[in-house]
Length: 383
Ligand SMILES: Cc1cc2nc3c(=O)[nH]c(=O)nc-3n(C[C@H](O)[C@H](O)[C@H](O)COP(=O)(O)O)c2cc1C
Figure 1 (cartoon, rainbow, N blue to C red):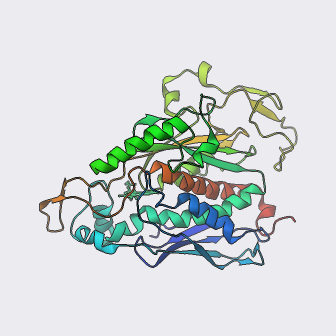
Figure 2: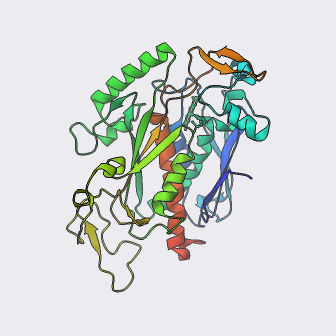
Figure 3: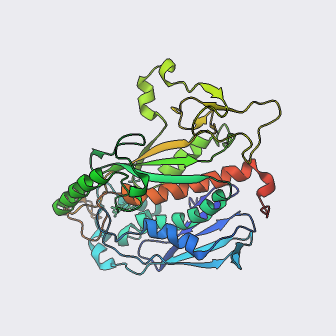
């Protein structure tokens, strides 16, 4: 069974191994007539690109996309959009030792247990490099969603055990997240985390972190209960990322310890709340259904698997990077215990690099669900 296709109407197939000639994506189901430039895709790839120092691997990839099909004279054709990103900085020799050893915390043995063989160079397709194709495809979805005023923004909310103050707390500044390689929206915390990560790098160790994501402009009504619920689709998208170990929406896990009287988001008349999509947005309500907003957003913008019109808010947790430069015990292909100290270029903390990938996967889910809600938009966009 292949597991490389994602989506129902707006679909993406990613391809490529970490040290193969290229990776990329084929996007199908994107409506015709969408203005789309190479720069729209390149911009998102630059945000994901490693080699910026700080928490990321020193493997530097130019990550310049080439579009092979699906765009003509600056607009989508409604045909498959094939995007290729060449791998230019593979140093496969660094991984020679992994030919015969299974990395703790990585997918080496499970991959082999399933397929009988694996591309051991950089983890093959279980590498973070695979996410470049997702980001390229997500860039297309983002442009499509932008037409409807839907905006997706992520930031690092915790890294290396240091929590970053959230929106509304002192010092939180989203613009800051776009200017430091850690994608931390808080200048002081960014400095603190950078120091911790540098210390971990020197020790040959790694750390986990969380990425928060907020979607604004989402109308009420997106999500297909019961198996295609908005939160279920987002969770599937996030947990398809390497090293992702958990997700929570709105109040999240803390809701398990709270009370209904504290956590219910009470409806209020439309226009009185803050953050709700105003009535008259592009997706109109069925006749007889009043427009409303919510006085709080503990649900994270989704009730019954359907968007409420409030911002969609969730947080994804990433475990520490498994490839570390410390001596660890493992088992080799000969079945015997052996020592392993991993060489090669690896991230220290995934969360900062995962932000743009989280946004891309979110965009892919939302573009798909939006097209399910707006069947008229499937083939051709209104001018
Ligand atoms: C953006 C991104 C970058 C990653 N970078 C690395 C890395 O440099 N080294 C590494 O060992 N794992 C890295 N990973 C994590 C592995 O891909 C992941 O841990 C591995 O495939 C095992 O899967 P699992 O942790 O989901 O079980 C990265 C993941 C992502 C999403």
